[in-house]
Length: 409
Image (tube, rainbow, N blue to C red):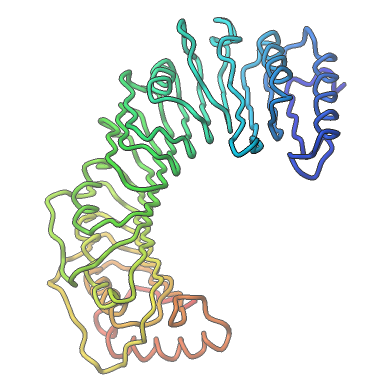
């Protein structure tokens, strides 16, 4: 019965090795197994073909043969995960043979994954007109070839690029009018310009560089993990323009905070309902945490805020005065969740400012941490609870909404 299976996935680990790099004997066994199965599937439609194995130069002709098999089998989903070996100090990669794909196979292809390969378009490239998902991982490709490839994918709905280094900008001239999901992770690209009017989800990991998604009125879900410095002013002036329609935003970044002041900007996240901030702060900036309240001022309709702290500072001593900012009502904020809370002065100032400006707050959740921001053990939780109750009586009593439930975890 298995001979009639229309989905074939060959993984070097499951074929006969504890690693995708299993030596000559494992390579011979893998090649023999794949060839034997494909021989049994001749003249049978194979909807999906996936090859995952440690690549070396001995596999070139075999992989090309397997690509030909996919063409003859009317394959709609093709995945190649060929992690290369290091050969005499340089990486040997498999060059994906686009020239082996005829017009029929390009027209049929719906899903394509290329991992640890190189890619070069032939002169008469007709494109992938019906491709729905494209997953590129460690792909070696020129700027022009990648741009031409993406421009040919007029029905593309899902695109992921991981560690695809162009060291240049990526500009897709033709609109990707059906693209719903875009993920760009750890790619050395200087700029991205594309037109994705239907885009709903955008995921980005890496150093911040100019990104133009065109007019994306349906963009609702955005996750940004930036490992470069981002000023508060930049985040509150540029991001609302690029992702103006976002409804839930998760932002992780290194934030230098200069002074505990509200940053006023005419740019607003006018549709943002859920905001998740995980900001890396230097220890010397612990006293300026209050300025992060500027995010709430730029998101007037936010209903849930999650703030994740990781900073070293000593707990605030009750009865000592704290800084405050002008009133800025957050009339829609119902849920405030703070983790990494060690009771520092800056954290307390942010907490007090937020709750006193949230008249409809329903839930306040505080997860305690030690001086270094790490989770507390059982004994630490007892001391933290006692300290927080003291801060609550001193600073929160009378200003927090009477309908709010306070949870300490």
